[in-house]
Image (cartoon, rainbow, N blue to C red; front, side):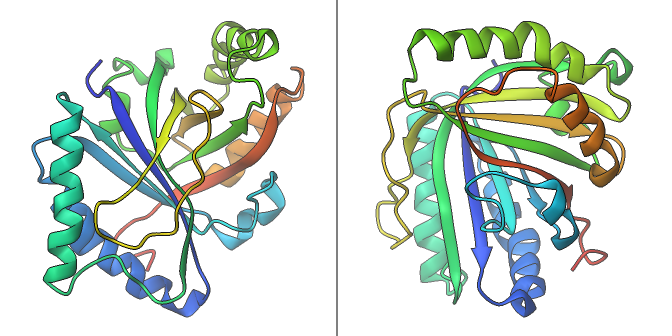
Length: 248
């Protein structure tokens, strides 16, 4: 696997008028510095648009404005340590991530489980994150018994039945699944602490979209409704790829 560890951050800002400043900082400063690290294979971020509110559900629905993620190369301990050190350095430069009124309901590392590419996309699943997309559909699910029989069956059904059906939906380029590993504990910065959950207790599914996320989501929901619900839905929402300058 091209990157054996991934990091997800779910972010909310109290003041929507600061979204422009936050986007400029993240896309012109923070993300480029992170992508330049040798141990970071790739990184993306997306906007949970206000107009998506009726298309979202879950316990975190309405509590997330932006989603960001990074993929880490082996050796992951060294890659994450360099990434952690950059966070401290950026603070010392006066360019750190301590933004007034920011909340981070999730800051956690996940293990990539499996990638899938729709036939129309042509590329390998490991290329999919680098392929341009208009947004994703994100699903985060919590399992109270992460290694129990019902959870195992949910993962089997997702891999062999649900995701193949989602790949047939117009506008879908592919998907990746991720299993919760551990929360971020930064060595120096005072981030909101994500509670420590058992490994495997949270599952994230990203569906990469070639069409407008708002248009594709109802088609995805129609497929998902044909399968039994599993676990506790934390968040299910379309999110939009942020185009610099245009979307600020």
